[in-house]
Image (tube, rainbow, N blue to C red; front, side, top):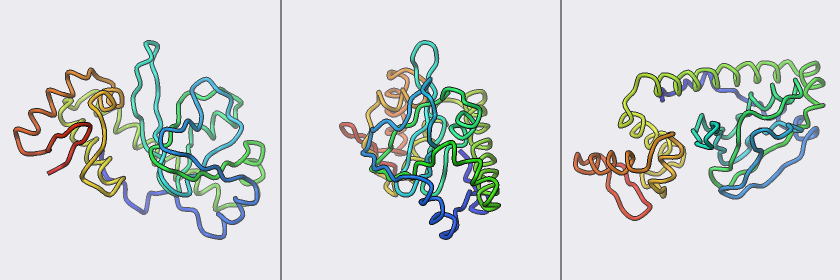
Length: 207
């Protein structure tokens, strides 16, 4: 995935964040906790205060694919749209690590849009960022080989966690990339032979 310029990132000013906290509530999540699932009603919109959240989509055969991460200061534009138009969620959100989120009730979004121009700018920037990331996913699936997608995924995850040693199983990688475990195992073995990674039990270290 291509790096996103910090100028394109949605930014919440301290004053706006303070005002948002008056309209919402804070929720603590542990790694693996479900924030919302597909086909559920959206009653509130998350803004990540600390940590990160993984956004997935599932096909009819219950195979999952990771679409993008929500990082600190970011919100989920898809839950905003589903909430505003009273539609069920089309995605699933799971805490990637210990995470704090600010949950803003959907019925407060109109007030925020009307009274806070900064909020409108923030939403448009979030929409722009998510659109670019989803295009990256489409391009990767359509045009990139699985070994490139795997390497990019590992690099992105290492950057997000601030560590080159990743605790993740082959099954998890296969699920998040929408492929078979045997494919991931074969590619990782080749990467180890090429001195790109070091493999241990449920652990991958980028070299």
